[in-house]
Length: 140
Image (cartoon, rainbow, N blue to C red; front, side, top):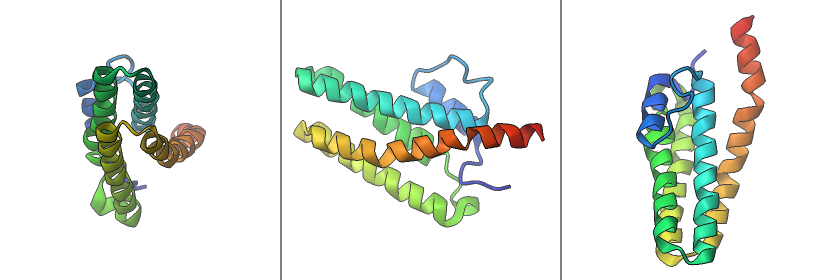
């Protein structure tokens, strides 16, 4: 079955490049995407805390990390040809999130961080929910 995410090695390489090594080499393609989503949401949370605390350098680092996860992991890993409309829509959503994160960084606006989190978290949760089905499908 073809999915919008047909490049598992790309996800592993992208995740390694943004500083996470543990478990990447043995993770399934499904789990790699979940790790990207989790790393993204973790960065948003840290950026929000840094913004609230006035720690500008940490805010910038965390927002940059979130942008890299989107661009180098989630967007770059999409198979736009095989994934069709779903992959195109995900690319558009991720690209919009990059713009909003950049605006949040420039304006010190936590509302934009919240907006992006509210856009991406449901994708992460849905992806996690299908994990059991992916595991059972592979075993059966």
